[in-house]
Length: 154
Image (tube, rainbow, N blue to C red; front, side, top):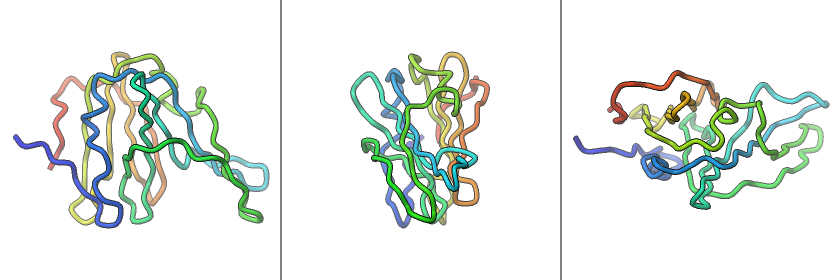
């Protein structure tokens, strides 16, 4: 079976998530939107830093695709009346925190022909994390590690 890296019409294909397999997660940073002193429900985007020195950015695209790109963390910034974006190391705020120090064992992705990638799951020895775009926002969910194949779903 040929592995396919689906392309978002607006943002392109990004990186091949299979390149993450075998790397150890050493740090996770996330950007958070804060408005009137209240943080949002979840991170705007995350950066996975691995033992190879690579930084992988995961974010929801403006067209509701799930972007997976190679890029370093942004700096926070003030948006005036709309609040601010802060970029901080993740502790327990996302499911990735539970997998710091673990190796990525497998990946699965889902896509929509109109928008490209819509979900990505990463498997670790102790469980997994599902990253998905939901109503234009990034959503991260802890999942049990799959015992099935780690092939993309067409």
